[in-house]
Length: 403
Image 1 (cartoon, rainbow, N blue to C red):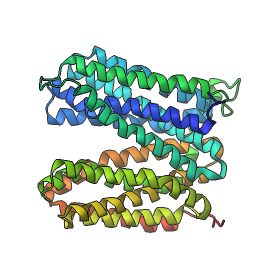
Image 2: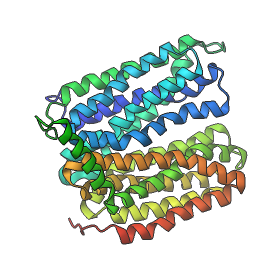
Image 3: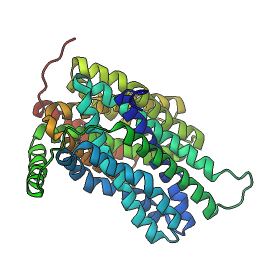
């Protein structure tokens, strides 16, 4: 495999199939499966969100673990969850077991996510922004393809008959096959493991594990930079949940147009992230993060002022560019700041804050919309983003870069 593909291309292929597998098991298959099992709206939402909670608790320790026992071992543990957890859905007969399996399935991304980014950072050298952005964009494509493929599998019957357990089993079998492909590819790619030290005792491993976490989370630059990504992701989660609802109920658009608004934002982010990552490698991370936060805040705040489809589309495009600016540079800046031996811990910290932002976005937006309206809700969240910028500007220093 490595003779055919470069190590980085192979890693991207592993990430693509891993995320495709996870997306196949998530949307729209998961909420429809929960509904099939008799779950109500609140229970359906909980089944979707429980895997993110897993990430909040396990991304940091998973990243730190990879600094101690090595990337290969830790990454393969995560890929085992991608490969085999989808098959456990075939055993589900009630909602309670679904929640247990969803929580355990969340360990796939909780372990694999920060470690895979650390692996890319290990091999990227001075191209961390570009390579992390390419890796992220390719895995996002896997996420995007998983949703329509899962819907296609469920909708394979031409008649309007209700969904049966068989259709859900086919979807989760497809998820398992994609996960197995990812694991098989990784086994042929991940040969060396320079981070692991042979002969390390349990006491020494525990000491390094704890000291690595303390060293990283005590570095205010890493925490502040990670918070920029978390706050930006706060608005992503809010848009993901409420942009379709606003578009249909307030702006008078149809469901297809609402889907296009979200789709174009994701597409712009995917296409522009590698370019922005390359620019950040040459000219610096901070200017792009600052510009991206301003773009996201302004376009997010403009949404409740707009009713026209094309104006909302323009706003979505600018938000997509802003997201690309921030996400192409924030992870790379964290990798620049931390010591190489703590890449895993740093990416775990970054991923934990990322998940907190994504999980909190819909919750905060829902609370604010219910308490006030779309205008005040979106403006308050935009204000939070802008208020964080001075802290980032003053609290994080970066060496000036030139061509």
